[in-house]
Length: 470
Image (cartoon, rainbow, N blue to C red; front, side):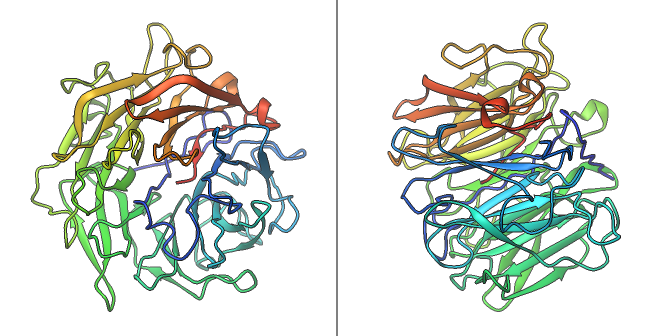
């Protein structure tokens, strides 16, 4: 069985990111990720290791607001469980901000944010986990509403480790799914600021489920939910997804798929979302059955009924021709993935984090690789790698930086090209966030920016950049 440990120090890892094709995450109203309704997408970054008051690893979320010039630490909001209107209180080890997802839940035109706190204690149940909706508005994110929980969660089980938003049943309202332990829960929209979701249900056991990815794989306007989970004999995971049929959900398996990090977007321009899975383990150490040394990603192309399980997916690793670097044990290539159109050509591109990439003697310095979409699918033509030693990228590569601990492609400047936002979870022991602009020719390091937890007014080993809302 797969095991995941949520640490309370600078080694905190999540990999719980989701991504949706344009339009899916904002099925109701508003622009997904635009928390203040000014027409620019914003960025929400998890800092689950942040100290709040005297409470270590209570956790925080930093929101940086987009503009024609991108994001800046001068335009930010820091949200904790001690913030006015946010349910609960900041407590030791809550890990508030370990998982994040954005979308308009209450149909008011402002994107909202769901924040997971997988070690939140409820009553006398320690560390069971919980999630909170933080509401968008003209002034940005503020206030909140807790989401109902299953009543039979085990202590220290990590519920809300995974979160995704999408219109799962095609009714025009965004819904939420949470995962953790072997519990998967659906919260149906629309949401009310006073009463929460319209309804909520628990799905049957799905193995050891901690991650979830959502997006429209079938082109019908309803988002599929993709759940990877560890199973005996396949530590890299079994991958199942749920598709809306018009009257209910049907469950399908991708028996040859592996990986936990995921993202969905239309890479080949055929109108169907494609599933990118990151399988960052090594076969040699038993962490991947069908993987590659150092990790790999696979692309499963969507269709009218979802990805055909019999298809031969596109497989890319660091030993693939045209890909920078080489596969080495511990690279963790594929530990984070994201999709978005960098160059504005209409095809979704892919950014891949390799948080464990060594650069000379600098262990686990980290690297991000950018790959481009095309009519024939994902290609390695023009692939480029970025580290903190790349010219124009702020800072210097150091051991344990984990550059690429999280990645996000999103258009922050409203120019039709996605920026590359990079989490650097180990930067100076506290974490940070780097941003590189997208252009017609790809990513540029000109004007690249970087900010650490200190620059974001966070305390403790905050682990900024381990989670970025998708």
